[in-house]
Structures are given as C-alpha cells and as structure tokens.
Length: 394
Ligand SMILES: [Zn+2]
Image (cartoon, helix red, strand yellow):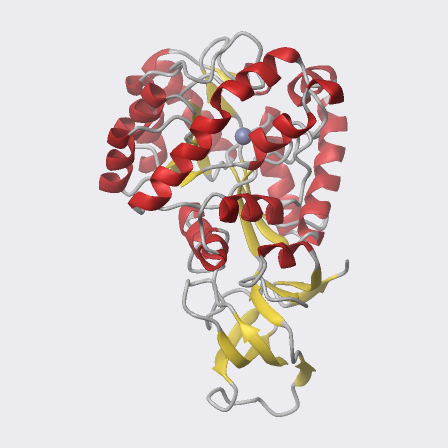
C-alpha cells in the first residue's frame, strides 16, 4: 500500500481541483482518493508527502504511430525499412512515450499486425511501454492514403473481409481511410476516398465483435461519409462545416484533432527536408484545421487528445505539445487535460480501467512540480510517473 498526500488533485473528470488531497494505491489499483481527513489512511502504508505538487491521471494519446519514425518523410522510410527494423524502432518509441508521462496510447496502423504484437508484449511485461490499444492494419482503398503501410481493399466485400482479418488477428478497433492525406504523394486531403457503403461494411463487422472504429477524415465530404457509416471517431477533422459538427453532436462522434501534425510540418518545412508536396498540402489546410477545431469545441463535440506522433518531426511522447496547442486554440487547461484523460479513455473503450483518479481504476498517475491549470506547459516537466502503481524510471 502507498499513500500520496498533501498535493493538488486533478482527477481527470473535469471537476475543480482538490487541494490537500490524499490518494491510496493498493498494488496496481487506486483504492481511495479525496480530501485529506475524508479518506482512511491504511496502517503500515508507505507515505509519500507531495506538498506543493499536482497529481493527475497518466495521459492518454488517442492517435499515435509507434512504428513511424518522425523523420522528414516517414512514409518513404516505411517503404524502405524491413518490418524487423521498424519493430525495433517501435519498441524504443513506446518506451520513450511512457517516460514522457503517456501511460496509454491508441496505435492507428502498421503492417503485418505488428502493433498488436507490441501491445501484447507490453501487457506481458516483456518491454516497457504505455498500455496500447491498436487497430492492426489500416484499411485503405487501392492507392489510397497510407497504402504503403496499410491493407488495400475495395468494395463492401473487400472492406468486410479486411475488417474480419483485423478482428481475427485481435485488433481492438478498425481504422478506415475516409479521405486522402498530407503524407501520401498523389492524394488530396480534401478528397473522399473509401465510400460510405465500404466503410459501413467494415464498421458493421467491428460492431458485431463489440469493437469501435476510427476514420482518418480530413475533407468535409469524407468526414460526413464516415459519420453516416457509423464511425466512432473522426481523426484530424480538418475541414468541418456546420452540418458536419451537427452530425457529430447528434451521433456522439468524437473528434481527435491532432493539431501537432500540421504544426511541426509548418514549423520545420522544406528546410528540414520535408517533401514539397507535404509542405504545400499542409499549408492549404492548416488554418481551416484550426477553425474546425474551434467550431467543434464551441459546439460541444467530444474532443479526445491525439498527437499523430510519428508524422514529420512530431516526436513520440510530446502530448504536452498537443495540449499546449489545444489551449492556444481556445480550450481551458482543465478541459484539455480532460480530453487527454477521461474523454480519451471513453473513446478507447477503457473508461472503466483508466482515465480518472477514482477508486477501482488503475494507478496511472503523474506528479508535477508546477500547476498545469496555471500553465499547461507544466506537463513538459514531470517529476514522477506511475503506471499501474509502479514507478516508471525517468
Ligand atoms: Zn495518423
């Protein structure tokens, strides 16, 4: 048993912080939490005095690519590298992500189901890393966005079979490419790709297996196709209109904005060796992306934090940057933290295990020296990290 005391508690639910809080960890689980004096302190427990510190849940990054290296052109590298090399990179990227305070991630696509094997390896304790929820392979149309590391499938029959193959391999969700994207040459972010009927076929299979779905969806028409097909989350959502926002609200669809991806491409640009077609496409949609995020936020769409780590210069374990960008675009620090904890856990379907500091949840928590509600960048300097009650060595 461990008892943490004297700190400011941000529990991840969006509630106002509690001063002079106390939290009890029993092995891997939170067994008590609240204001000091209101929670019984078990006898013989190891006590950690955290006066002046802030404690919050471990962060959840709902959109990462652990198998991508954040070089200038990650998809080209993916084409050149062997599966084994990419897997070794991914093991390193997972460890790096955890050491940055991200205790859970959702990995949205790689070849040969390797992300499912990495998920299992972390769960078995073979390698250190965050808890991983993973989609297996991306389902994309022939020549569609990310075809070089996804499974090319066409027509409702093809999508049905592709989804069943992912589920057979143990995928936690199905990832679909509803539009073109920035990193693939020859496709446009605004263009629809998989059709509504194709996505519906895959989503139906996911639902039958009790699983969820996520759509890479940047342009408006593709976003609406994915929503009508029954998608759980819109990834990026770069060009939303009022109707799309309305549809998301009506159906409870989540938005994972990934503001970091265009931010780094824009910041580093051609000078850093990013291909011209990537820089040009990014320039076209960056401002629309910010506007779309603000529209969704204002309307009350459920927003979960995701970085798209692994895209150009978007390093693994930089969730604090995404939170900073979300705050810059109008979120309060408390709402941004909720997007990276409770809301992200709910999107991943693991809200009963992680995401909030409440009794019965896994003891995934971060200890900060500074108050992130005053300055969200406090999350870039973490004093200590617990995953399932165990201290993660920095
Ligand atoms: Zn992505």
